[in-house]
Image (cartoon, rainbow over all chains, first blue to last red; front, side, top):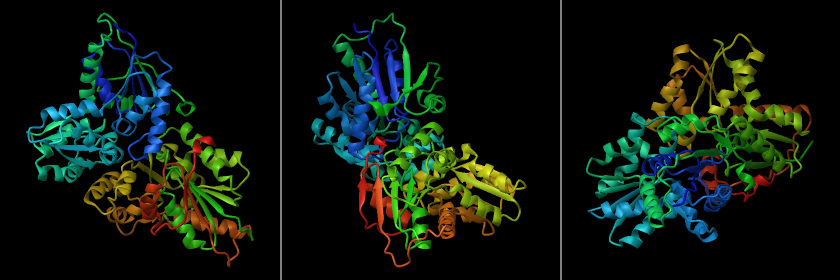
Length: 269
Length: 269
């Protein structure tokens, strides 16, 4: 038993899609969330800058006594996970490995498509990890830079998102991809449109949901799950003002955020 | 005569649309440009964060002996201009005042539309300045948060940009607006689509071009124009890696960037 909270961070508020899954699958776990809203997005920045930001995000979270840190951001996981795993003592889990495990299991035709930010796609993190696990799988990658702004501006079920999804996913359709990793926290909100474009037989992998499962198994194996009787505590921190947090935050969390949100100065870390 | 360079900064590379106009209208002036690419965009951040960033941007530029600083960013000009003008001794010019002067002159029906980022629209900077100059003018405002990502991803002449422009500009059309201020550096790249949607009789005001004219008059009046025989020097600085600079940079500058680009650590300032 280990009743310490789990730390989760993301470049912004998209990581709350992973928090939603954690709350669902591990309802007794307490969570400390940090969203780097003052420097979002990470997906278009250089590896050097992303890595610097990820170190700062983790240093901030280490103000708390945590049992585990989750990098909920696809870009940050792709670019910086190995570096921070080597540097810090606390277990750090990214979203890439859990998503890849699920995709490798589910793909029958061994053709997997990966969508993500520019940073994620350029890192080839998903492809490399898939190759490690099953060298027979052929991967196809596509950066989808407009998906994040479309989601954040509420174009969830809109003609424009459909047109853009068709453009982005055209290659996957042509190649007969049967499994698509939605490699960015925002993309599960476009699941309906992505499913429409790809067709009903194609598996869509949500890295946030897979990571929640992975963390559940990880903690269970190490006997580190929180006591079932505990009432979980949720705390949210952001690096820009807390005002916009509630609107976007509840979009990703799919419920009202009633807990306290606090602004911190991430550049100090 | 004052041969010192002009400093120009922006939240990213969009400000190069203003630099292009400066080069055109003041071909002998040297320019030091800073693009805060490590923290772009400003348009969705809080006033507090934007103001902090603008102070840092100016402190960095003051490493050079400049005769004038231009805030090429609509959001930064809208939110922080007055504060920095009070704080620093060097003349600082934003894009709002020059654009408003042009709009007030050109609007015959006294109905002016303003498009910009969320930060610019919420600040009401353009509206307030218009009211100061001509209280009879009625203003209409519309945040266009998808225009920046559309431009940056090359959707300059695309069906999707047209659909979104129609949504954003519907109110202006209904109200018979005859002058539109394109209150963000990126928007002039969508000029063709905006003109199509608004119709040929509507005046489109480019704040970058108006600011270049304003600066020319300002320097001429103070006898501070650079000697005509001078060969201008251009230097570019960014806060993220210099790699992506050439692609996006030449999109906005509309020519190849052959000068040196250097990365700096803006958080030090």
